[in-house]
Image (tube, rainbow, N blue to C red):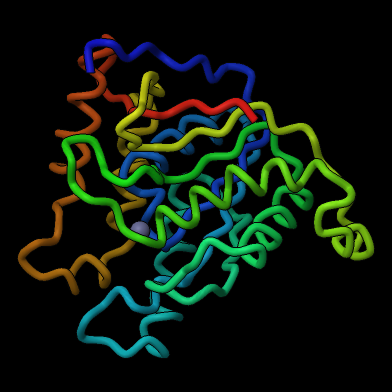
Length: 241
Ligand SMILES: [Zn+2]
């Protein structure tokens, strides 16, 4: 952690977040989003699944609308109203051309300068194994950013009015074990906690293993913040397409 440097986010104007599940942005990413929207950055979320397999006691057809509703509230708490769900199956997302196409379409639609996603390496920092959907989605995000700029990849998208977009300058992966940078989220910390708290029924469904948002994020973002000399920060792997 001592080798982290602060990521310069002053030039961001349009940010598209693409993650696997409702709540994936809420472990630090949303705190960064709160900082950005507060200063006028446009942010949209595309969530690949609806997290319908995430509550053990609730069948997917009932969990889906609940989790979409909680994500909408989580977004509202960090200043985001542009939210869509891409409808892939929770828990069994595969890296596929179909997934790349769906994400490339979102990149062309929103025309971001920055795309953010969750950590997609095999492990989280500390060695805890990552989850299959996160790995598949993050890999697809990196590739879809390139696809979005090429007229001849998924050429039918042009027919849908989605012209190529080559404007993505940076991809940020939150919580990657390869993180060399951190985003200062001090100003957005409280809203970031509130956005995780918006997933109330999901967190309740985790039972005793559920994190207490203020404590968990305080510890995690506080530790990263100390490494870069601010109160709270989130670690990011910075990729240049
Ligand atoms: Zn997830």
